[in-house]
Length: 313
Length: 113
Image (cartoon, rainbow over all chains, first blue to last red; front, side, top):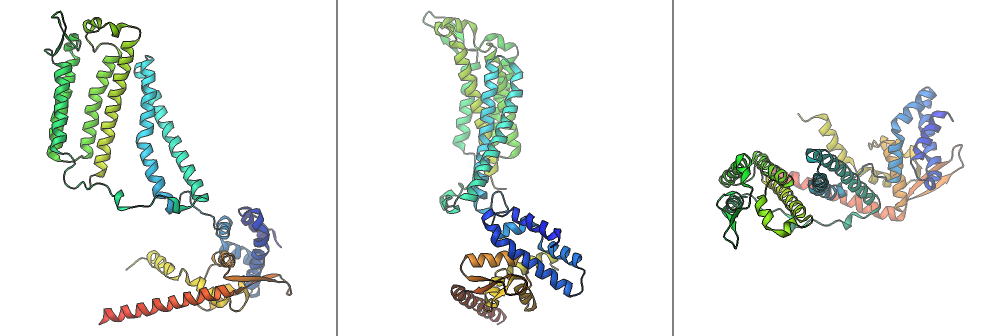
């Protein structure tokens, strides 16, 4: 038999498990030869006939897959939604979280803006890892597992109805109160800690009134206005998600920078608290505050993205 | 006018499954792969070789076909035949096909009226 059929058989059987080759090979060869003979009998040239028969049989890997019932897809329909939902959830939080932690570690080491590079680099590489490993596990599961073990969908999985209002009056009131409280406690000059000896000290370094406090106050006022706009619209839009993120960053970045460079707290106030001056206690308080601010900002942005997605349009 | 692609897809969907029924009927008389392919084509069941050959193996694994090598002729060939189990499955499939046809007829008449 000519080499073309031999090569076709070899290519087909190469994709078939060894123990099944012996049963498939002679039958497939006979079928090919039958078809070729038939065409030659009808007056065709043998080598042309062979080419046409093999072309009709198509890609040998595809034929082998049909023989073995092998799945020609990485993630099939039974697993696709479970895979996609898990991947989406993980990618929404994990890379940002790990990137933030790495960035903070660099910040604490005193890298300043040099912390942004490693943070983004780590977030990207974590995203690639998450995507790869989740997909690999699902691909293996699809080939070895039983799709019936997947959690079944039930009515309880339906998302909450969001057709009325996404932003309730109580949400808005609470948010505005928190913002006013921030202004009052932290920034307002008359809000001071009163000590036993009658001395009053501002929490925030009064030197910041030169530039940073007015800027931060402006941001907080913008946030309050934004809360009111948000209530009026009644739900999240993508434009609002962007504005919210910009405002969040505009507040968090200066505050974090001021904290890390020890400019935020009133030095006289720090001097009054012995505990703060002991060891690295001030540094610990700073890191905890910075991590909290970053976490709250990221949570706020992620929450707005989720709600904007959920809003039907 | 609906595109050829759409039409082809719907026809394929409609035909899918009839190849199994046709093969089980045809193999009441034992036959080998290529000859079965020819017989099915002549009787209006055009089927691709790369669909039919793997299908025959699958039906055999499911016990609906039995097979036997015939080495008497110049070329050894594997002959398939519909098994008893295959015959009972075939009856069910044919009944269902008839039920579909009846239901379809009823629906057409109901709509016309």
